[in-house]
Image (tube, rainbow, N blue to C red; front, top):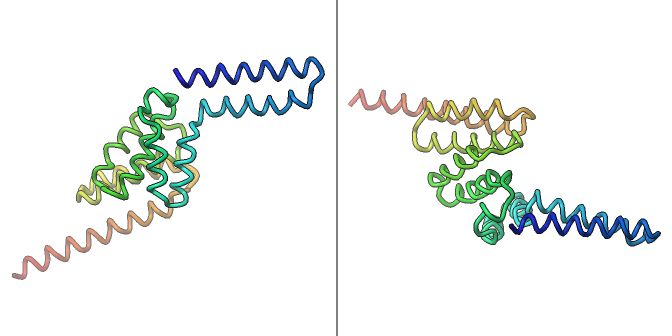
Length: 184
């Protein structure tokens, strides 16, 4: 319910702004319109998640984890469209600590849905890296292909290419190890 309180508050502030402008107090009405818009935007974009994203961009995982921990139960505190992004952020933080345990967060983020294609591509690229770490080449290739499709603006093209190159190197090492094992 706290989300809907923000919408109600935004509507009240917008109503007050319109009332002020009708009575000729434009100097007070216009700033209140901006305040109402700001309150309405926090319904769609949770300020704690925005701050956590800022810390992730600055490569401060501890700061991002602190702000995401303040959310508590994300299913009740966040708008349903943000559930996937919340899990993506948790997965990115978890991938630095325990990469193989971050898989569940990325899969949950994909299942809950995200509207931005580059975030979908990021989740699939991360899953490809986890599959490579597990030595599951088929799954890694599948996730890389899906990530390449989802990356329409080519924001992750370099990372996808680098991961494909790493898979090629991994194949060469495995072939070389098999060749060495046959000699003995």
